[in-house]
Image 1: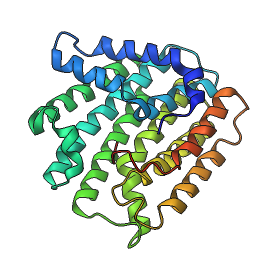
Image 2: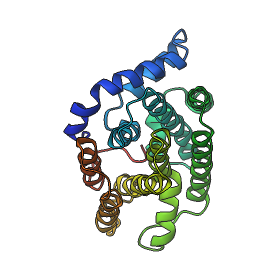
Image 3: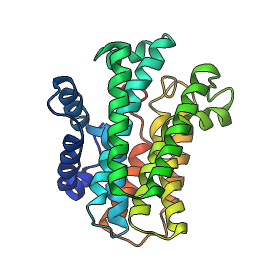
Length: 267
């Protein structure tokens, strides 16, 4: 499943700028790093998180250069999490992690993941906004806590729906929330608007991840949960002024709740 078509029209040029930021901050002289960067840039629908950053900034009328730098940082954080997650899944015996882990093996994945993570925060430091640093550091801490909960005390949606959602939001949807909230911060949006967009990102991220959990399609509750979260994401941004970027955000919310059975889990 590909990203909504409207995104290509609205933010294609923006993504070219995001790619330039990523290449600038990652050492292109190291072949393996260059290879990892190109994999990130070519990752298709899994670039939904930086896409949301760009669309949110556009919906708020912000056209400054920080939107490209922020989207690049979000992309690098996600790449880091994918690599670290592959190691976590292998440690737990999950076969789904084998493709990601094959790039470098456990030790290499950890090192490369750390490098992507530090690259992301170098970008944030250069933007020079401590609120961004706070939101993203809090988000990555919660994501790590969510991974620990998932590995040590997992919960199925059929047996403990509330805990299942809490873990899913912590380990995956939190970065969607941060991607949208940080865009509101650089756009100097009022606190109420910032929280509105954070809620949008959290609900969209939850809907997106439901179908991509290994047990999602077979759980019997995934369709209803994804639909509810998708609807709440759309409702969260209803007060925003109408614009092509808002329309694209609404399209993304609907897209996120769709069943995508052929995709690998936990991306």
